[in-house]
Length: 68
Image (tube, rainbow, N blue to C red):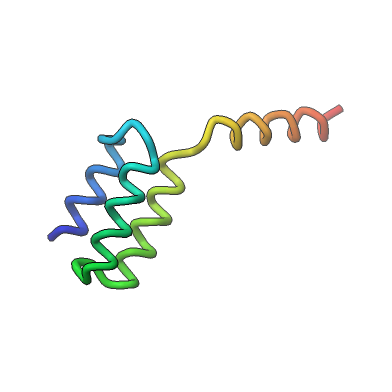
């Protein structure tokens, strides 16, 4: 149940900063509220949802360089 709630928070980008929800995931995992498998699944979702602007900018630059 908590996992589904966390998934919704992540996919809707409830928190402005990735670090806020990342911290909460770590706390839930450390206190045993979510399993290692759930933690991994949520972390992957988090990284896919909260894409850093720097990372995406670097990818665009690399793609443009390759095309030339």
